Length: 117
Image 1 (cartoon, rainbow, N blue to C red):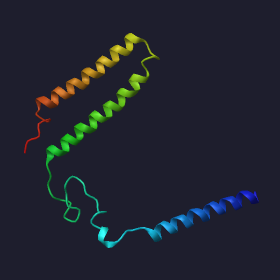
Image 2: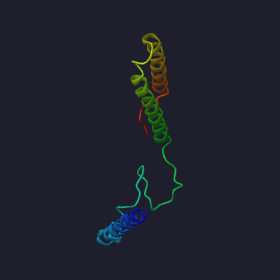
Image 3: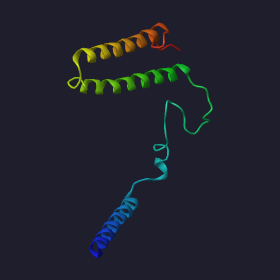
């Protein structure tokens, strides 16, 4: 028990010493403040956050997230191919891809995939 406590204390000291050394030799300065400020979607981080932005940009982001989640659902389907009945797996995957294609067709019809100002 005493050996375990001494080993833990040594680990604690080593990690704290390494953290102190990294803080001392880090190269952060006030000149890097602009570089380290957050920059998202072309907005100036120092201005008001309540300015209007393009709704089309938001909708494209939502479309991307939806299709990203659907791709995350396709990967397990591929892995279960050998574990399930071939005909049932084919029916489910065809149904899934038809839903995907109908979604893309609907977005194309609504002109959501065209980037206009």
